[in-house]
Structure formats: C-alpha cells, structure tokens
Image 1 (tube, helix red, strand yellow):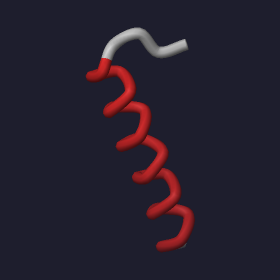
Image 2: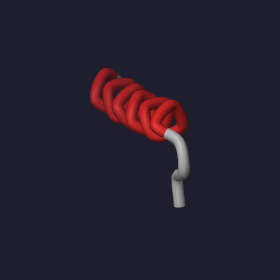
Image 3: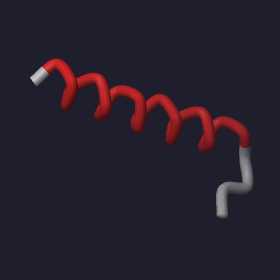
Length: 25
C-alpha cells in the first residue's frame, strides 16, 4: 500500500482530477 503521505496526496489529487474531467466531458 501507500507508505508516504505525498504519494497519498498525489493519488487523491489525480483521482479528483480524473473525476472532474469525466464530469466536465
């Protein structure tokens, strides 16, 4: 699993961005 906080934050930001793009489209 994720071992560092920065990796977790990047993962969350990436997921939110993908969701936002999907909704925008």
